[in-house]
Image (spheres, rainbow, N blue to C red):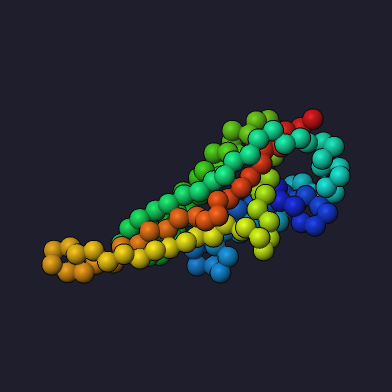
Length: 135
């Protein structure tokens, strides 16, 4: 399960990574878990953290941006799967401080006598998550 802090509450979320949205890396609140921070901290302890990033290259901008988000989601799901029984994965980036975003760069290359554009996308800053295990 993936959770996120909203003020003084910890709530379950579902990843919503969408290349066409203004905020490409987002989360939708769920109802599987909703606890005050103090109660959450008595039931769980942080055991480790991960910084997730991804990159993709290609010739079609939209496809490259979707590919980098898909790669990031795959890594997040792998962390969630490896977290262990009863553990939760907490999104730790702070709103307005270090939210992860897709960063793109465009390059021009000569191919068969023609100028072609290629695109590179990365995630910066990394998506930081903590793995919290039951006490």
